[in-house]
Picture 1: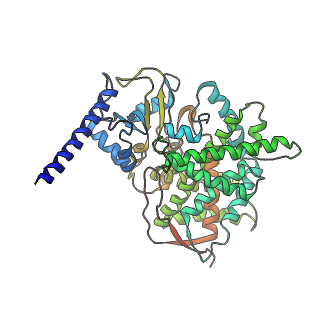
Picture 2: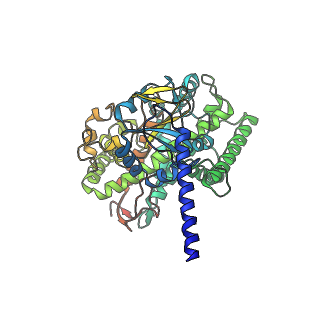
Length: 466
């Protein structure tokens, strides 16, 4: 009996201390004029619930507090906005007390000088340098398309008669093709070393910035340090031997005189381009295959589009810009996949001064999470929003609708948008014209914090012509 009393007293004490700590955190960040909400635990806030529940966390908070509420996630006191009009205003009005506000973990690992983190004249200069590399005008040059085409042919070779993990294959494709564009002339040994460190960095970006050995953040931080070392040594080697010529993005960034970048900025842009393009291209490629597998009528329509392109070409002729621009249904498949399997759930801003939004007063230094995910499932914009229907995107106005924020919005529209679509289009082109497949295993797809198949997504593949 006494033991039970002791246990009960201990539990009561734990509960009391927990309530006091959570109340203290609410008081610490509470002030007049803030939106309603809760701040959770000191330091941790509501991060665990946010990462575990994701969209459910957001819906529960919205039903309790409304479409604008406060929380504490990823070590940041944060205002979450699920209001479409307010979100659009925030995205279109940077500099009016608002600047990029990515979480500490992402800033530390992707880089403080990356294009998504800087603002004002620095953003304009870095964006100019990147657009000179990946704008549609540059992509139209056959050399860029030819390299992507050659890689996709090689990557998809030899899958006949095998069971493949399409998640693994799309991950390899997305990182390797981006890395080769960045540092084309380097050995596969360098790529393997880079990939080991990049994998650590990638996982660590969505974590609490606590540098304790064994945590995702600590491993990501070590990955970042090793990547900086690898790229710095590579730039040093290239500068030491001026006789060698390199036709890749790293060389362009090092030699750009119109938009000159420091070495720190070059490293951060390399990491940013690989990081942002990797997840979008790999996940969209995998999920497009998944949705097409589940919807054979759309798979056939996509295949017909690509077989028509191949019928106009010789067996080994590469896909060119005119072919790419004719892939209207492919583009629709990509947009519908990105809408339904939301890769980017939103963007974050930080207040540089106290500002007022929708009648609420937001303190200086707080983050604002522009949560755009729910817009993708708005039945007024997308009838039957949970159904995979690429044909809705054949109405061109939909891609340019003011609430279509799949690639961001305002002055921060993703500079790599077209390049990413090109890569996915070429991947689908060679996959559907070379192979047929069936899914085996029926593996689970997780939607948050990243869209992924924890156990892989396995397909039994055979030649299309057999």
